[in-house]
Image (cartoon, rainbow, N blue to C red; front, top):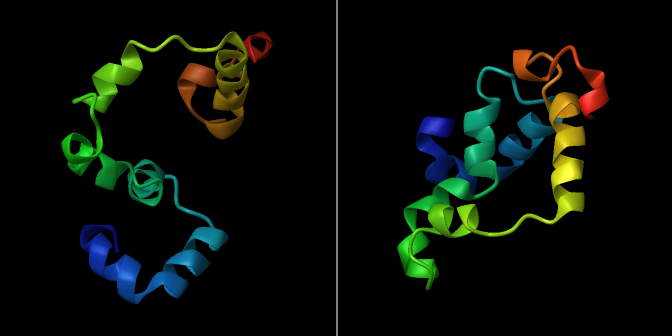
Length: 93
């Protein structure tokens, strides 16, 4: 499905939606979100759609609101409970 994403998205959208609702296996979750969030499309077309050039570099230079950063720090261990980076110190979140 991921290898044929444009075709699958257009012709089998209901199947895709059903599979997402059942749960995305951890082994392909990162790759699936890359496509589902449209990051793949945005990355492929970033120069066409941005007056800033490389969007990754642009966002790296932006100041992050402290509340947003705090929310991210809280969500990481909840989003990735089995990831070794987010185990152990529950006071971080």
